[in-house]
Length: 101
Image (cartoon, rainbow, N blue to C red; front, side, top):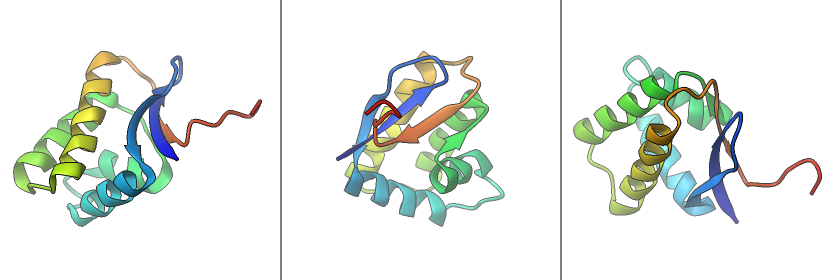
């Protein structure tokens, strides 16, 4: 199964496999919660507000804590998505399943 990122309006975009998301989450949680509160919130609770701040935190974390290539790929995918929806009110991570399914 895969993990998808979406906002309150759009369809999800695949950003990781389950293993990839797990590795990304492990890397993100190793970063300081004080410096990266939205990143921590995203991986802990599966959503975050302030998409612009989240993108900036991910970029900053990449600069300060160089991850493995697979983790960087997930981070780059998230940044690309966040740049495409700069006014998103909420960013969600899910397995892509909906209530109807």
